[in-house]
Image 1 (tube, rainbow, N blue to C red):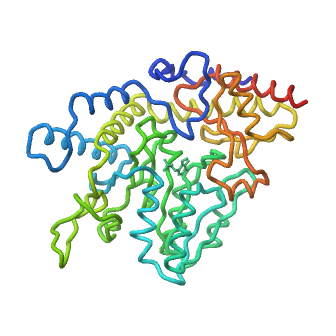
Image 2 (tube, rainbow, N blue to C red; image 1 turned 180 degrees about the horizontal axis):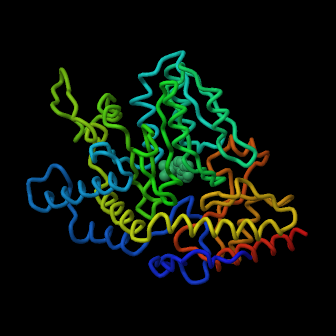
Image 3 (cartoon, rainbow, N blue to C red; image 1 turned 135 degrees about the vertical axis):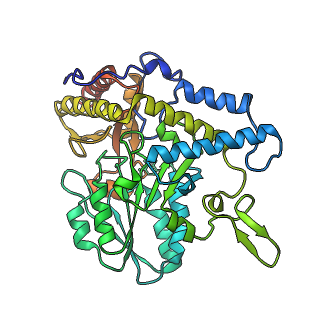
Length: 403
Ligand SMILES: Cc1ncc(COP(=O)(O)O)c(C=O)c1O
């Protein structure tokens, strides 16, 4: 097996109380385990400092509001967004994309087109199909290169002035392919379209700078970034957000309500109707601090080395087919001829190795690959050589069982 000596081991396993010794957790692309500082921040948020935000006249609520808004500033800094007012707290990437499809997307009309790619997660497909049903827009689908990256040459050839939006995964949740997001932005902008990046798998693995990427919308989920579930982020350029109508109506998103007419708050409040996930926002702040304390460059280098070691080892197993590019970010999908991925997952579970088996909410990609499902190992900061070794041992057992 390739050695990881070229990278500094992150050595943070002890920060993760829910990972027992000897358990190889290789399903971080589904959801990341939580480090102690995040768990502590959530516990403190409920056990010591809990109150609602933005409404209370008492000190506790004012303090919680300060902490809540400090998290928004931290997210803006994390993405290098020009202003915290461009950060909208949502439940996750799914809600972020649905918000854009409803609010911004409802301004599209029949004849307009949007462009997606073959490898998108259902969260970046179905909201646009629902929009198509509402407005009569058309959806185009960009193909992939042979090694499983979004083919930007094809994107360039497909784009026309009728395209209003290009919506692509920054990192594929199945193949780990990294998009050249800056080029995608340049291509979209050259025809007057906006670029939405689904950053779910990118934010835990790559340093993201929305200004350098020059994208228009960026969406991610907190739980994949070592933070709590139920909290996510939509970033959009101020002028775009400012022109967008509300998505949900309710408390906190208004300026003045009468039965005749209601006026709305400016962004981001306009898009945060109802009592927010206060403690989720606090936990997200702790998660970003945690990830930054390790450093995304170090995380990326570490996961790249784990992927390299895994792919090298799996190349040696007969009848195992590897998907995705060699330089995948932290994610390795594979199939073993004649063995259903669920059986692979079950046998690996007996070996204390947790992987994901299924279509990974990317059925069009499965169709493209010609398989109903894949097995997927995905890495996080807590993984090391021992987890790759356990995976390989388990897969050798799969090969023995199935001959
Ligand atoms: C690339 C990608 N996009 C979107 C999502 C949806 O994220 P969530 O279910 O947290 O909203 C996921 C989750 O698996 C993902 O991997």
